[in-house]
Image 1: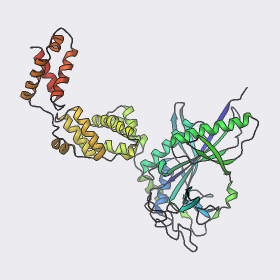
Image 2 (image 1 turned 90 degrees about the horizontal axis):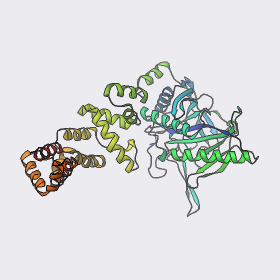
Image 3 (image 1 turned 120 degrees about the horizontal axis):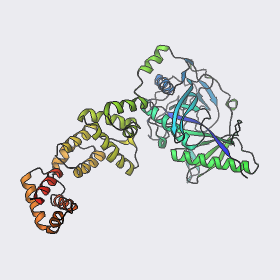
Image 4 (image 1 turned 90 degrees about the vertical axis):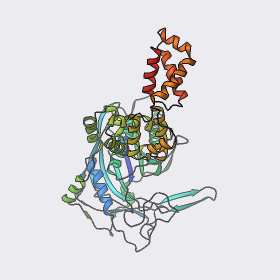
Length: 478
């Protein structure tokens, strides 16, 4: 009979910070760019070049630490992590081992199983390595150093997670918090947020940890969930066969839905860490921490409470609107312009979400201006356009950020509010559909809907639906 196993998971999350320049030089951090064009002697590891710390990196790291309930290490320093790898030009990485900038934090997650605290062991600052590009046609590997020296924070959790659901909930909270702070865009597909999963299994009830493996190359939440499930099953199978799990780093292949060993897992002593001799310690004063704390934006939990109180919208709406900073900013800005928060919420929750899903985008990709959505809501409320036309116009706003007033004017989409004109068309529709008139008068009220539909068709969808309903009813009941 097979035993019951518990999965134990800890994460190392690397986040590229949203600075304009690299951590120890003034090269651009912009994503893309021709290979090796965002480089200089410092980030390509030339002998004799000296690093100079980017102050903004420290401020972002402290901001993330404060938002995740960490203690800030006010006297912190950098260390060299020594290893040879082709995309690591200095043969060492500048990181923090002995005195990381943040320690002992936590975030609260919520899953179907309820609420739970996930502890954060530490957050440290470090530089990113370059990128190897493998050309299988030529059978060579070439190195792009554009990413070398891009500032990272690494958020190391305690092994407090027990399922893929908990891992995804933890990552979503980190991503949302960091995006709200403006410290990173956290795009997994561009590598600005990357998670390595440390996973082991043990018999249910055991206090002793099993042997863990580390899984790399995870660039989406779905891949992370699949990798956790795949590695859990692989380890249980080994234990059931009486074999040992080997401590190693594995690479997940999402296409094959399996992982393979990359290298044996190193411990800290394998990297021969020592304090970096070229960088002075960083002293973080109380006043500096206070100024960073004072500049923190309103984060999601406070925003959620304020929305429910201030805008009188349901909790469900408020949760979705505050899920991303972009959506929350758009909601607030549009509501401030038109003063109709419930209608703004309906457009964002309905048509905006639909179009994002259809295009495989997320809220960060929204590019239309709040004044254009506000203007569309005002046009609809004033009866200048009807609901059908409003949806058509909104698609254009979503795609091309057009001015709805101009668009409606240029495309002749204004609702017909001329009672005389509408009455003439409706009288004709009634004359052409005696059967529906008879049905209505025999108590089949649905027949009126048919006549309204025929009128809208005759008016090419541009009639004011309120007026059409009113006139149709009046003529039928004569």
